[in-house]
Amino acid sequence: MATPSSNTVNNGVNVEALLGARDALSQAPEGAQFKWRATCKWIKGTHSRSSVEGFYGLGEEQHHKTEFSFDADHPEIFASEDHGATPVELVLAGLASCLTAGVASVAQLREIQLRSVTATLEGGMDIQGILGIDSDVRNGFDGIKVTYDIDADASKEEIEAVVAQSQKRSAVYDIITNPTNVTVEVK
Amino acid sequence: MRTTVVIIGAGHAGLAMSRCLSERSIEHVILERGEIANSWKTERWDSLRLLTPNWQSRLPGYGYAGDEPDGYRTMPETVAFIEGYAEAIAAPVRAGTPVTSVQPAQDGYRIIAGGEQWQCRAVVLASGACNIANVPALAASLPAAIRGVTTIEYRNPGQIEDGGVLVVGASASGTQIAEEIHRSGRPVTLAVGEHVRVPRVYRGRDIKWWMDAAGVLNERYDEIDDINRARNVPSLQLAGSPQRRTVDLNALTGIGVKLIGRLAGLNGRKALFSGSLRNQCALADLKMNRLLNTIDEWATDNGYDAETPPPHRFAPTAVEASPPLEMDLGSGAIRTIVWATGFRPDYSWLEVPVFDRKGRIRHDGGVADAPGMYLLGLNFLRRRKSSLIDGAGDDARDLSAHLASYLAG
Image (tube, rainbow over all chains, first blue to last red; front, side, top):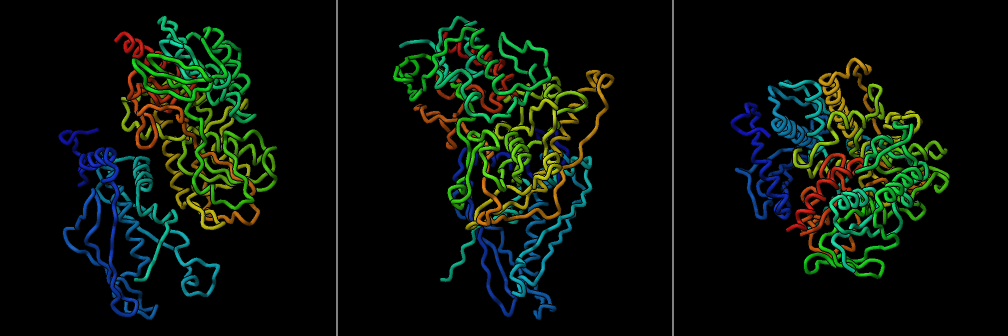
């Protein structure tokens, strides 16, 4: 493990802090129990605004530095007013951001200097599913393709290994590739 | 009854420790639930051969003496080898003596086994790492018509109903059993999670020869980055066949086995599989190539390039464009599920507060966190080779030295 003084690679990731947290939480696994939260208000039509601010972790309530909000809507070809990204595009953004954060962290840990990282995502969807035209077609993506273009001080194989490891440790990748029980209630 | 050290288990690991204690003139007894080499005798499938070549089964004061050093022992040959060792070292084995309780006692441990009580100063747990087959909880909710078989219960395809078979787990057991069942005419789908791909033979030599020579198998538990992770790495996808065949995922798809993602859940009669298959295969391919790079560098540095064929790489694991994500287990297409999902040791008789929150014994390289208690034969206990027959010797030598100084106070 590189010490901060000998480590000239800087991807802006504080690996020492992450490793310290990992050690601390393996001793105290109750602190590792997190709850992520979002609220969403309907505005009009298919337009809604979600916001995130508080979450739970390390044994207590936590807060973002500020509230973040995300408008979602549908494009005009869906007879909507296009006030924001479609929810499925937000899913792609979530996957991309999660994998990219992983790429930076894994690269830092492996002492690989990144110069640029660009992910391009495409999710295929047959909208006969959501429109209820064909019950054999699922609502969601039939597949997601992520293409990384990475400029870094490393061989192609090392970069591929960073990207593979990032998938292995990604929350959103896991959420998308594995089933999750979803409970929706009405108050 | 009183003795200085009780060794639990007369497999290769317990016997290796016995030999090391005898060399130090430390009085001991080996308590064995069944017979010598019991799990090799009773918990392995018929066609299984050791995954390590004959020359590599080296035990303290004992080794391979035949004329097929590169072959792989059948199970009866493995049992005979271990029985031969017990005889050669005159091991004090008490067969048919299952341990039912180990408790702390004044100056050591009190052990109940086969109706007898033993008092000893130190105890060595060499009862194996593979006593209980891990079966995922969802197995309890499977449709009643599906029969589940663990790798401990599996013997041969004749046990398996005609029809489709889902093999869950693609490590050494899962890949070998998938191949054998598929070749018997029962179409196999193999659910693939994290796995470790290696070729059987590389540049004309057994991969185990390279790993041994290049020092990979000797890597120590206190010198690697993340020992927790290393101890949980799945077994190498290897088979021991007379033809020295590589049984990797490409070999399996080549004979018609279907690959599917890791079994991730059950929704009614529908089994759900992870969409991570491509990355699992990419990770395994990359990891294999890193091992081959290590081997190639070692070969160059140590002058093997002239006498071995040149470096090369294997085709990446082929994965279909969109592997299925679900399977209807009520349709009758799948009749049997083989659980090749790993093992865990059975310590149900160990009444000593030495467990971590995951039920594993807390230890430092086999020195348990309880005075005078030692472990052997677990994955990466002290070295990468610790779970191999070939790993028992060095671990037993180290731990017997620790044990001797413990006894000396």
